[in-house]
Amino acid sequence: MKLSAERREYLVELRGDLLCRRLVGRVADAGWMACDLIGAGIDTPSTLELAGYALSIGSLSEIEPLLRQVLSECGMPPVDTQQEPWDVALDVSLAMQDGTLPISAGADFLITELSPRCGHPPEITELMILIDDWEALRSTPPTDDELRCQAGEIAKAARLRRMK
Image (cartoon, rainbow, N blue to C red; front, side, top):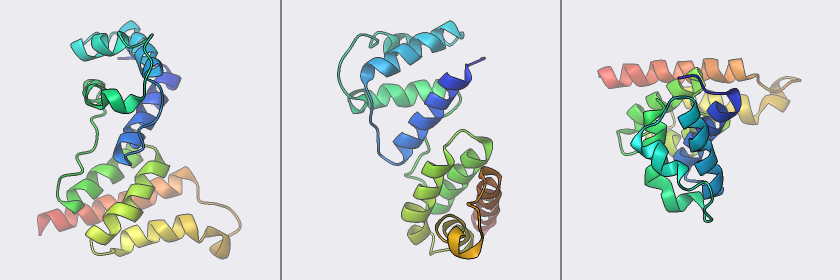
């Protein structure tokens, strides 16, 4: 499957919006995106159904289950937030590392939702400091690579906790 950078980014952003429960946008935009997916060779029942919404009105929240299915068919299944907290942290941090989840959405979710549920681990606290306190600690904001590296530390911590 070869997607344009624009369509791949749309799917990544959609995945982040689902994770953070901020699903906004127009149904028609998702319908046109599905048309592009079909053109790229993803002609599954879900993408065909979603393409039928290209001329529709309404918000994306109205078709959330269909969007989740399309993301899964594109190899970017929504993160299952009903898992154990450290399992969710592993999935989020790995997705941040591989670029299938926006760094901003992943970091926000790790800090606000998972840190308390995971007992405020130092790995997530370091991510928060890297994002929030960079002005006090350095002259430039953290790069995406630095944030992905810290996501890797969170993934390591999550794997260790899963083994216990």
